[in-house]
Image 1 (cartoon, rainbow over the protein chains, first blue to last red):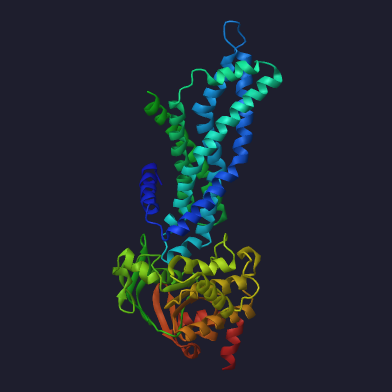
Image 2 (image 1 turned 120 degrees about the vertical axis):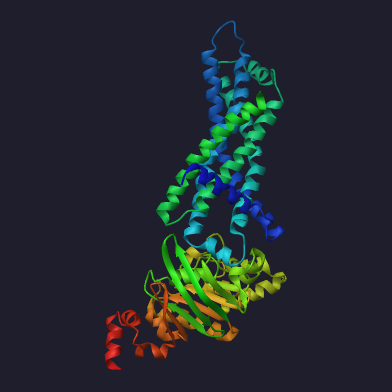
Length: 246
Length: 250
């Protein structure tokens, strides 16, 4: 199947998803369940990675800017800017594409090959909408919170590393985190996070939903889902940056 | 009653169903039998609308399913129950929740009425003390029973079973076959069973359609199956040593 066929099929898939849910109460319950599964269960990995990346960014900046003409607060400033602009949205997005994306593709794919999706269709339920729309809505809702958490934890990691290694005085780092703050950057990254949340859930769902065969094909679909959603995140990152920051 | 009128279906250039016409009667266990690759699964999936037919009509009590829009099809689907080959129970739901699922989606019952209905359906298929177990925690036979309970939860007019006793031991297979037949009579359902198990055919085959190479090759009652002169059907029926011996003894 070539790229254009995939685009056409994906568009039809999206139309299928965006239909009125069977029962509002059940749809809401599904969203809550997905928020827990996709968001709350990802807090651990987001916190660990953000903490260490924040620390590494601070240390690398400190060791590369050892110059009497450059102020120490630049370490805090760089850590904050890196976390806000790129790490907490794009890199966390890529990590979640791996964790959440493979989970979604294998879950939906397994349901397809074990005829659970056919069972839903026979009952007269729009399986695509029932299974996938709650995932997309949940990710769009919860991922901005993960972004904010990642920014705070990353800056905390940088601050802790700077303090423990003694590379930058605490007061200088804190000043740097407040220096030249542009609130729009938060909006820019939140928009990116929302777009990435859509990609992270919709693309793996697409690969899982149309899987044919058995366990082997589910595994292949899961791999394709992670690779292609990662590529799409990187592509969307470039396009959104050009549009939102020009 | 479900009537097929000259149903044709192809995949690319390969014709899988050729002018298949038959009436599946109410209150009877209708069986579709045939060798692997004969087209019986495609026929069953065409009847329930998982495959679109190329031509011909599929009538659910005079409503031609092939000519209906999505909304009308959805209404007919609410009258269907389906037991899949592997059970197709939802992994994330326990036994009780699986049976409750169609009621939650489509019925206007109160919570206690739904619970009563779930208990009734599970009792009817002899499932006790397993309400809170997950599909992975119960045996294949129990999974089939739960699938039957889920299929009858909404009082369907039409029940479809795809290889309902595949992967089961002979004793459990007969129990499942008899259970389907009892439910068919009890609730006056039009039941269509897709199978290649001769034991099922001889146990519950009231109206049998034999499919060979996509054609309707034979139709009749289980009592007539040993006397047929249809070569393909004879090859199918007397494939095993057991049935060859039975034929000799008749």
